[in-house]
Length: 157
Image (cartoon, rainbow, N blue to C red; front, side):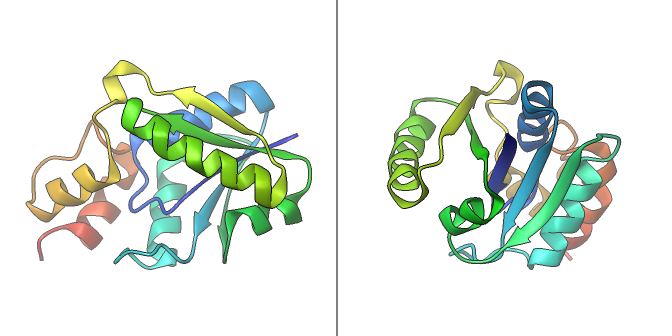
């Protein structure tokens, strides 16, 4: 069974990396599926994929792919898989519960939730974009290998 970790990853954070590492421990391999359409003013797909790959350096059995359209259509094309999602707190739970219901209706795929470790509960892509835009330190939010790429794209130019 394949583990799919999907999102816009704008940008990829240590919380996202934690999900991948934990999915690897359970399923043996993981696919990070980066959504082309984000519904928001995001970095281009190539930039988000580059940052994700830098963030996942050193991990084996991980692929980073781009997908177009609905996640439900992508997972149907993959076959036997589960969707891995992270929960930081109760606000995430309500949002994710609604997504889970949609995924089940659209493609019948199970969603597996992993609770965020306490030290990463505050880590969000929004916080990273804000900090980088203000030229503030982002270590502790993103992988060291990705800091340069994140600062280059999201930093105050």
